[in-house]
Length: 464
Image (tube, rainbow, N blue to C red; front, side, top):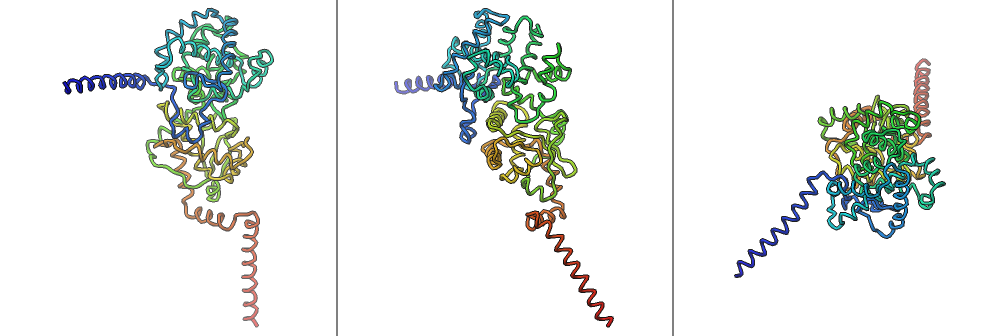
């Protein structure tokens, strides 16, 4: 009898474990695109991953300090139904109901605690809010106009909302946004076909978030809002970008990352060299590199380069300008978390931050890069910027084959030449101030003059 009870208990336990395993396998194998931030990353700066004003999606839904925005979501849905091509609320609900299984698979954390109706309502309200906001256009001029016309947008900090929309845990599946946008598109929209509507939404999203991106990206050179407004068809370069990447976009944060990729030439170079240089490091910071003869210059803004297109030529490190502002740390952290957890792709943001962390040790290094134009410090304090870059690399999984492997190695070779090591030693120990630089040639001149005078005296003595 005892053995039968043990066998029954074992069978029950095995069934429970099997059910958990099945649930885990379903989530894991589905290619989830919206993940939770790992605790080691979260503990470094927890606030960087938490929404301030609005919850989007299930992870932060229902938190007390975010409930105030729910009424604004309702108003956005109401306005969308009034102005949209599709005015039937039932059709929106039915469309999202048909996507429920696919929606659940997008989240790394099981959503068993959220019923089907609740999930559909959440997707509808959150999605319509995003579409209404993005339809405003660029976040400066258009949002100011929107605030004048709508009380809903007048009562909250729009920049904080935009910041919340770029958090890794605060996302909706991109196909949900595309579906809602397609159904709500005005009859007089530029494009009528669904595929073109998708491209139009990507267009508007990139234009909307461009002000929050702290450095040059693809959208700064080819995704320009004036092209949307002043022409009936996008530029061929834009069409090419959308054709290549539209299918790869998983959510709004992922869209920002995709639009921020390095140039095609740099990515080709990465494929060529990253397989060769599996070991890399850069032991010298910017100040020490300058002492070794390395110069720092900002990348020409007229060139179609991304923030990640750092180059090293003839002893000069060319670095595209990054703007360090209030939300820069948050955006970089969430992009890093996205690459570390949800993105089976080259870790361009992680590698960039690693490279900058190698260059920056103290505020003195930031000052050097700021004077060269590589950094625009909107935070005011160079030490604060140094701390941000130093902390960004805490608890992250470094790439085995860094995107900047070739640069690391070429810079190290440049610095390791014996005469450069000697010059770096002199600069570090004797030429630390401008007065030292001036006094050295003066001292050399004095020594030469003294030697000449001594030789002359000896020569005069022997002649006598």
